[in-house]
Structures are given as structure tokens and as C-alpha cells.
Image 1 (cartoon, one colour):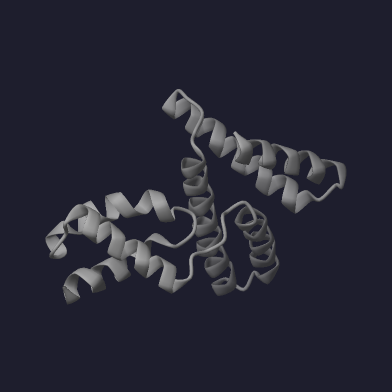
Image 2 (cartoon, helix red, strand yellow):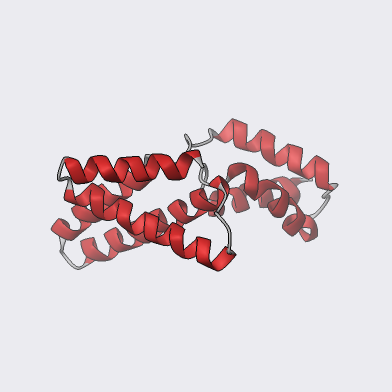
Length: 149
């Protein structure tokens, strides 16, 4: 698995360069991947790893918000560094126009015509955009497309 090997290599480099924040973020990520592997009883796919990374980034965003509210800028900065490390392993984000095209394609494929079909569209769409766009953004755009149909 190319992505997993890339993460493991980055961890080795972080350990050699004594970059504590990078090392900690990568160790946490590898632990999450190993736990997922045990849960699935197989090697997680790249899409599943992207989902794990996205989830970890979302947790970091929430933590940053909490730390800033609590007046702990030092901890927020640490979380931001870890978030940046994790984000470097995600594919480049989709621009809104490309996302709209993927949504329209998924709507055509599933034959969706109303908000009742939103689940089908999301099921078809999420594997294609995983790790590249926030799920909430996708949901809002799909809802807008189906509501406007």
C-alpha cells in the first residue's frame, strides 16, 4: 500500500530529525490505521485511510476551537501543527466546480430526482470525494442540487 508506506517513511524521517510534533501526529495516525486493520481483519484501503485522516483533522479542528476559547494558544498551535502534518497525506482538495460535476454525475447514475434519493447519491459520491472535501460541504451541495431539481 503506497500511502501506508509513505506515512511509515515520514515517521522514520520525523524520528531521525527529532521533529516531535510530526512524530506524534504520525504515530497517532499509524495507531488508528492499525486499529482499523484489526477491526476490518484486513489492510485498510487508501480511501479508508483518507477517511481516518479526515476524521483526525476534524478532531484537531474541534480541539483548536476549544483551546482558543479556553485561552490556550500554545495547545492550539500544537494541534494546528499536527493537523498540517495529517493534511499533507490527503489528496489535493476538490475545487467547487469539480465537486459540482461529480455530484451531477452521481445524480445521473443513481437516477435521483428528489431529496428522498439523497442517501443513494451520497453513497455513490462519498468514495470518490473522500478526503478531498468535507462531508458537510458535500451534503449541502447535494441537497441544493436535489432541491433545485
